Length: 209
Image 1: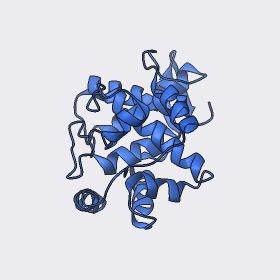
Image 2: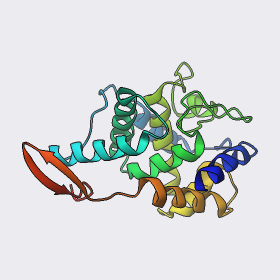
Image 3: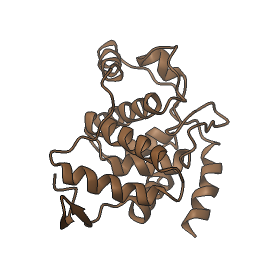
Image 4: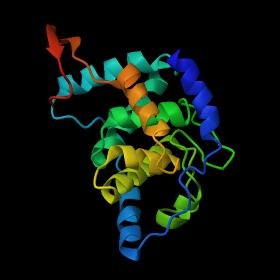
């Protein structure tokens, strides 16, 4: 049932001006621009190897309903976890946003012109990045999405409902934050997993890293 609701609301979502053009002070613009620049290859950011393996295995199993190829799932999840970690965000929320924004279609494009997994409007490239950047590139798109969402969280004193609504451009209406949290609780909420790590059976809560 929730899958049908998601697909229906993805269609509705294209009617909104996602990530509407914004005005930024020079200081904020410079700060956001510096967060876009990073040449480090994405990698899982965990203090303990077993937690990284547990998270990746768990998320890959869940992502299989959208992406069948294991290597592709690993690439996307590694980028999501890395970009979330470098911006201080919860990767489970980013996964939830992507589920609604693009249904994990990296070539998604809305009627308003928002593109990619996190549905980034092209004006952001000129505002905080490089006009030559390709928003259909997985890491570029996810990086923009994480930096933009982090900006909205800071601007809204870490109120996640207001920040999600602003990210989506739904003008403070509760339907989008509610949908994200429903998807989070249905598909992406963390759980304790059983993992054979170095020939030992372990119960791992990867959120306690």
